[in-house]
Image (cartoon, one colour):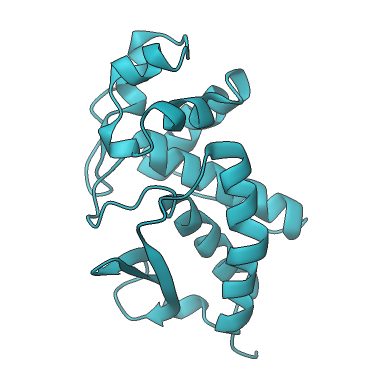
Length: 189
């Protein structure tokens, strides 16, 4: 199979993903610049790598010859570009949004794809999807409203939800704002 063209991925990010994300979830923090997309040997997990105010998007090396999987990983990382922090720390709200958006992107651009987050109910990304997807369906403008008050996911508090007039339960707010640690169980059952 031919290798995925990084320039095509950058075009997809710039013209397909980011405009959609910004329209629905608020504008990207302009203090950061995406300078490259790399396929890396840092394990199979995609991630953002920070160098000053520059960002390199790392995608898994093992998907270098699969444009469908590359777009799936890139769509996930694109959500993290909304409010980069320079650290790997995120919350369930952000990880769930990234996972939900990546699946929706695939449904729209690669109909019939066979990508799933996980079949394991204990998988934290799947739990994040099960938390955020119904939240987005019930409150379609919530992310944009929340980010109008506090643009950084990691700086959001229960007060942010109140100020943005996103009237969901305190229990849901606590779950959405819980730290996401991919190697540990969520702080609720």
